Image (cartoon, rainbow, N blue to C red; front, side):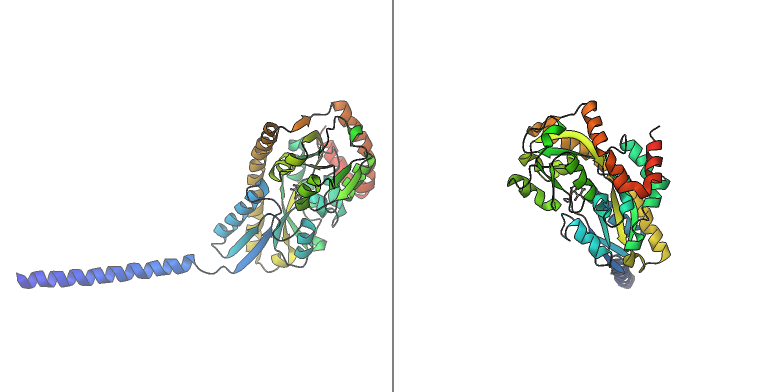
Length: 341
Ligand code: GCU
């Protein structure tokens, strides 16, 4: 009896040792798999804050890519312009110094003038009109405009419509006359538009606009509701003139040098994930656009909605920009305008 008990105990002990060893083995195997160093670690530049819709889109992109490549490709998102201003980022991307970014096409039009055809004043009737264009053949075609510059367009992100905001009250376009208005780093078309209004364009990097407004180096700027709110510009420029003069879409980009390091299969995964992340960004954008407007209105920002007549005046004033900036791309412009009919 005693012998049987002893043998059972020994057998139980052996079984326990075998089970523990097997589990440990599997655990360490699992651990190894999970912590397998990625084959590629890429850098993604974003100039907005961590909680901004475009940054959320970037995180979603990185997450989808990690999942679908089983951790082989890791994309690290650097938000808040940690990798430099948009122009500097684009310059580095052209030679593979930065792998991915989301950039306003206002900046990109300096590298591929055809993109001006997508950001002319009062070109789109609505958000829906813009998405009909960008999600269709025109959008696909224009994603390829930067290839000669070493950049691959992956997807379109939303950036709503841009309006003026100022340190002094503005009730009509006439009152913008003589004011210094900040424009993006490189935005030739916007500079001309400001001049047509009798105001003075002042180029300034996005991250410097808050202090520019606060110190009075500029009297106003122009942007969408989420940027106006997220950057706290509303604290120093409390008058918002909602003329919605442009819709400037944004492009998610990959450096061509980066793309060439990858297999065709991985390239396809990246394209697919970029497009999915863009759909997510658009949802986040719609929510943020509303909450930002509500937030700044509650803060006490004075919002003027210009009359249709006033908007038409601005539209007429901007007509020469169509010829000057999109003469070689009139076929695209006409197709876009055609879609409103
Ligand atoms: C928008 C856009 C930015 C850009 C900024 C600007 O906020 O999302 O990418 O830098 O406008 O006015 O500079």
